[in-house]
Length: 144
Image (cartoon, rainbow, N blue to C red; front, side):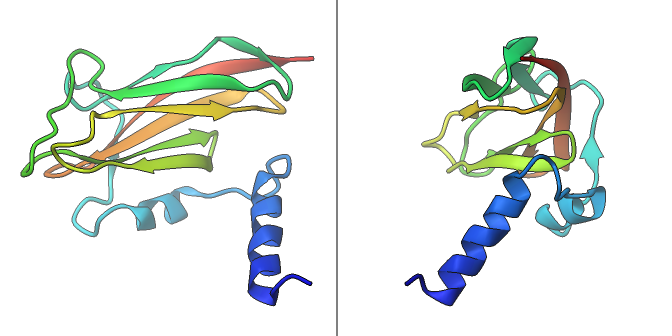
């Protein structure tokens, strides 16, 4: 028999992954940022805007890779005093993956392997130190 807390965690995860029934709104997303940086910037910045590499169309339920690199025009630095804290991937408003990075030792890039049931917008959010989070998005279609 499973431990009640383990079962509750598994049930919660199942709800979050089931066909978009649970959504993380902007309010929940804002709580994930460090207190001094609550806004998400959507403008273009060479070193901070996440670059999303993913197919334009995928088959329903088929695994594919999404690569997110911080710095659409050049690579964001990874120094002790200035680095990318994390890279998060969303499908529309639901967070589906997050990678935390270490200063100096982590290159500001993450590769996620995901599968989708329906099309929408993939959104990447990266939060560097000394700045608010930066966001970019890419439309993706799902075929049968």
